[in-house]
Length: 464
Ligand code: ARG
Image (tube, rainbow, N blue to C red; front, side):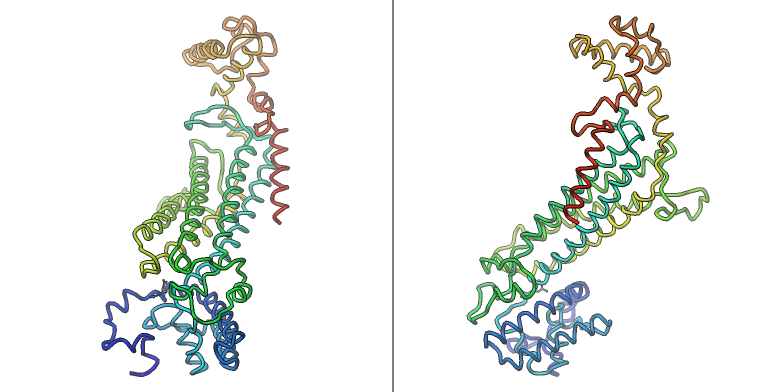
C-alpha cells in the first residue's frame, strides 16, 4: 500500500478499514475548523521537542517551517482534506509529510491525539469566547444608547403580560443590559477554566520524554497547565460550562425576541423594526415579518439541545478518553455559531428599532396601572395597606362596570370612595407621576434610570 494511504496504526492491522467505518468515524468535515489552532499547537510542540533535544533541532526547524507554510496554504484556501485521514489532526500530519517528507514523522513524539484535540478545542474556544464577549459589549453599547434616547418614553410595565405599573422604556431596555452583563461575566469566568493546557498528558498517562509543558503553554498562550493527565484528556466540562453559559444568553435574547415580536404586532404597535432586519412575504404584499427575532427564539432550542447533548455524552463515560468525545465538537460549533448569529442580528435590530412613544403612552390610558399609586396614597394618609388595597380594588371594579378609567374620575368621584383625598390625588393618577415617584435605587424614575445609565457606561468603559 502507498504510504500516503496507510493508517498510522497499520502496523497492528491485517485488514483495511471498512468504508462504512471510515465514513462513520471521520470528523474532518467539521473539525477542519480547528485547523489553524491545531497547526499553531503543533508548532509549539515541535519547538519544544527541538529545544529539549527530544528530536533533532534540524527536524524541529523543518517541521516548524512546514507547518507555517501549511498555515499560509490554509489562509490562501489551498488546503484539501482527505476524509480517509479521519480528522484534522491526521490530515495536518499527512499534509506536512507531503511537504517536508520524513521529519514530519517525528512531530507526534510525546503526544497523542487525545491531548492534542483537547488542546485545540480549548485554544479555539478561548478565541471564540473573546469574540462573543466583544459582540456582547457592542450589544450593551446599543442598549445603553437606545435607553438614553428614551428617558421620557413611558410604557406599560407588565406582569403576567397584564398591565401592571408604568415604566420608562429606558428602564425596560436596560434590564437586558444587566442580563448581558452577567452573561459576559459568566463567559469570562468560564474562560478561566478553558485556559488550561492539556498537551503533555499524552494518551492518558503522561509521557516518558523530558517535555517542557510550561514552555508550550507560554508559546500558545495558556495561563496554566493541567494537573492530571487522565482528567485533561477525558473531561469536557469546559465545553459543557460554555454551553450552559451560551444557553442562558440565548434565553435572554429569546425573551427579548419574543417582546419584539409582540411589540411589532398591530395589537401592540410599540415598535417598528427596520426594513433591513425584517423580511417580507412571498404571497402577502403588505407583510413585514420579524423573522430575525423569531429565529433567535427558535434557535435558542438548538443551543439547549447542544447543552443536553454534552451532558448526556459524558454521563456514562469511564475514564479516560473515549471516542464518544469526538461528538463534543458539532454541538459546540453549533452553539458558538448560533450565539454569534443571534447577537449579530440583535445589535442592528435594536439599534434601528423605531419605538412608538405615542402608542406606548396611549396604551396606558384607562389601564388602571396607577392603582397601586392610589393605594400608596391612602397608606400615606394613615390607612393600612391591606385596607387601602381593598378600597382601591372596589373603585377599580366600579370604574370597570361604568366604563371609566381612574384618570376619568373627578375629585368628587374619588372622594366618595376615599374621603381623605385632597386635590393632589389627581396628580398621582398620571403615569408620569407614577414613574417619577419610583426614584429608589433600581427604580424606574428618570433620576434612578440616569444613575443606572451612568453605572452601565462606567462598566462598558472599564472593559473597553
Ligand atoms: N478526532 C478525535 C476527537 O475529536 C481525536 C482523538 C482521537 N483519538 C483516538 N484515540 N481515536 O476526539
